[in-house]
Image 1: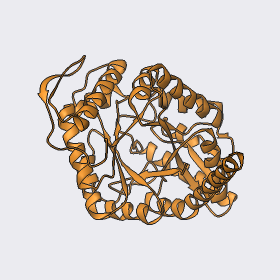
Image 2 (image 1 turned 45 degrees about the vertical axis):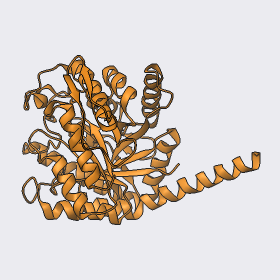
Image 3 (image 1 turned 180 degrees about the horizontal axis):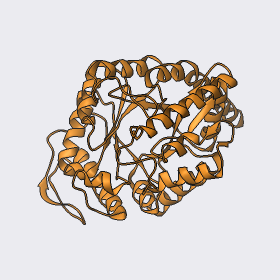
Length: 374
């Protein structure tokens, strides 16, 4: 099955290692970055959510109107709108984009960040709410007759939407989280389960946990799996590691200036609350380098803030590393560099073709073997 590649729908040129050169929403840069993804072979881009960030739904609509054929992954936090309202927003965007939308539901792993927009629920309650929220959105996308709902977090009567997604039966649902509460909710409802990049053995355990939770939830299928990395590539191994250590130095400089936290609500000197970040830091304590190319120093420097483990090496090395994750059952590779535009182009030009070619070769070989057995 072909592998997919997810990039970042950034609205400015800043990162943990680079100070942004303009405001939080630079329309020209936003389009330039999105067009680079489209030109260099990426399948879709993520429009991330933060309490003070530009509204990702409007940014996604802006990109959809200017960049044809690029898929849209819209991050959404359930605490910011009622599910029936959100379902109409998503359906409208799916129609506006010609059926290019997937929605990534973010439950929130930091009490302070959630509280910035009035969310006071505890960790496990938030995941319970997200599960109910997704169930309502799915019904609103697909049911043409009015329906009632009375659950633990939402109650309403006689709702029916007059706008439905273009995709049939509905857009995809994406979800992430590593805690037991997250696994219970996401494995039950998600089409795509998102993990942060960890060593191969740890990733295999995570995938097994997702599949077991899906089975426990009564599903006959299992979610597709996405894994996220920060690629650092160069023409030689030596140059790649020189680039990696320069990047790490820039992260430390920005952390020292108090401006390094890209993920809202997460400060690199504070112990993170969410299980995923705690896992990244625990892995970093075990060592800096794992497997073929995984490097944890960037995760340690940012306090495990979001997608922060790097893959370092030549394009060939990084492609081979990604193929090892694909062998574990990973379907979607999420990647973004620290110099977002240049790294988007380099990764798309030099890594994506290598991975796609090898996956296609393996698929063709599997089809040939299956035909021989007939």
